[in-house]
Amino acid sequence: MRILLTNDDGIHARGLEVLESIARSLSDDVWIVAPESEQSGASRSLTLSEPLRLRQAGDKRFAVSGTPTDCVLMAISKVLPGKPDLVLSGVNQGQNIAEDVTYSGTIAGAMEGCMLEVPSIALSQTYGMLPDSKISWDVAKTQGPQVVKKLCNMDLGPGVFLNVNFPDCKPDEVEGMSVTRQGKRDESIFKLDERRDGRGVPYFWFGFQRSKSNPPVGTDLWAVYNNRISVTPLHLNLTQTDAMDTVRTVLNKTE
Image (cartoon, rainbow, N blue to C red; front, side):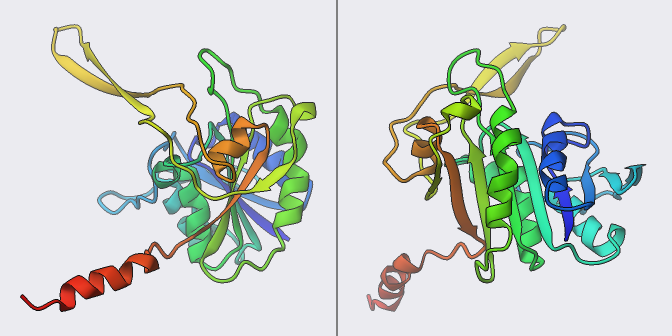
């Protein structure tokens, strides 16, 4: 089985090392094509206004001066000797749950693999639910191989990929796995800091608020809050079919 790895934290990220160890528990044919620098929050952006640089960083290991989407496209169209059997994106440093999904470059890497008709899984290690907490990769390292092994051969149908989030706890505190739906936080995760540079000119920096929501049972938020591994099926088609009749009625209404 040929496995392609990518991420949004960059070619030197600790989470990519964890992901490689997960992949090598399943196959010896592991390829890494990851961004040269951090691309967190890049979502599914594609580099069109400047050239892309491809650098070989080791055996079956390449860095791209672009986004996770660029990396998967570059890997499948240029780098790999053939189409991969599986795309793994991550392991992200931090959760990709609820509203994070639409911002995430980690999700975008798996999404691009899915669009190219390759089974794809995004993986993230939750942390920072409490103030001043530090990330631990132990749950991803210990639980990741068995989780990916169970999920990688599933036939999900066209346009569907998986989003996996490991809880912020010790490995022996994991309460199992839950198939979840995408949740929604009670409040914005962002805070805006206004600062001043050495000349007194103001500038702004987005940061994250570390606070918990009160999510419904069955959501990705609920799962990681309760020390469960969250597995959320996502799909490329963003059409809200339930709203189509409402829109159709309004458009067909005569004044």
